[in-house]
Length: 265
Ligand SMILES: NC(=O)c1ccc[n+]([C@@H]2O[C@H](COP(=O)([O-])OP(=O)(O)OC[C@H]3O[C@@H](n4cnc5c(N)ncnc54)[C@H](OP(=O)(O)O)[C@@H]3O)[C@@H](O)[C@H]2O)c1
Image (tube, rainbow, N blue to C red):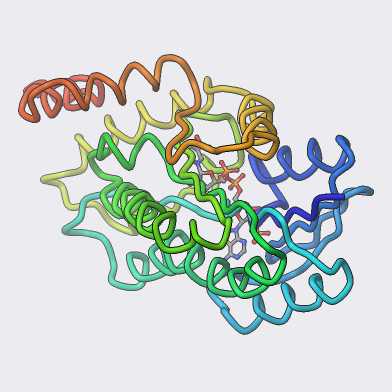
C-alpha cells in the first residue's frame, strides 16, 4: 500500500486530498500544527518551519511503514497589502512557511525516498506564481520560488526514480481566505487599491472551485506513471497561464491590472 504524506492536512485542500486518498485505500499521514480528527488519516502534529520536527516524524513513519512513496507539500498561507507596508516579520514568516516549509519537508523526505527506491514529490504552488498578484507580492513570490525549486529538484532527483510536480491551482473555496493575514496598516496612498484588489481576490476565492477538484487532480498525479513538471488546476486558469506565456509581458501586466480593478480611480 502506497504511503502518502500531506502537509497542511487539517483544512481546505490538504484535508480533502488526505481524506480522498485515505478513502481510496492509500495509507495517509496528515501533517499540520493542529490535530486532524479524521478516522482514516493518521495525524502528525508538526510545524513545517521546524525541520527537526519533520525529520523525526518522517523517520518514525518510515520505521513503521518501511517506505514513503508520495510527499504532498501543501501547507501554506497568504498575506496581503502593499509591499511598502508589509512588516518584516510577516514577510519572513510567509516565506518560512510557504517556501522553507517545502524545503524542510523535501529535505526530510529525500533520504527516505531514495532508500525506498523512488517516489513522488508534489508541491502546492499557485497560478499566482505565474501571474503575480498586486498586493500579494510575497505570496506570489513564495509560489514562484516553489516552481523554481521544483524544476531544479526534478533534475537532481530523477536518477533516483523520484518525480516532482508543481501544482498550480486557481481559486479554491477553503479556509485560506479567512486565514489570510492583512497588513496591520495600509498607508492612505495605497488603501483604496488594496481594498479593491484584495476584495476581488476574496470574491474569486469564495466563489472558487471545490477542494474536491484539487483532490481529483492530485489523485491522478499519484496514479500517473510519469507526472508532468507543472499541473494547473481549473480550465479558466489554464487559459490564463497559457495567455501569460504567449502574450507580451506588458500586455499580460495590463490584463492582470484590469482583473484587479486598476483602472485610474
Ligand atoms: N485556496 C486557494 O484558492 C488556493 C489557490 C492556490 C494555491 N493554494 C495553496 O494551497 C495550499 C493549501 O491552502 P488551503 O486553501 O487549503 O488553505 P487552508 O484551508 O488555510 O489550509 C492551510 C493548511 O496549511 C496548514 N499550515 C499552515 N501553516 C503551517 C505550518 N507552519 N506548519 C504546518 N502546517 C501549516 C494549516 O494547518 P494548521 O493551521 O493546523 O497548521 C492548514 O492545514 C496552500 O499552500 C495555498 O497557498 C490555495
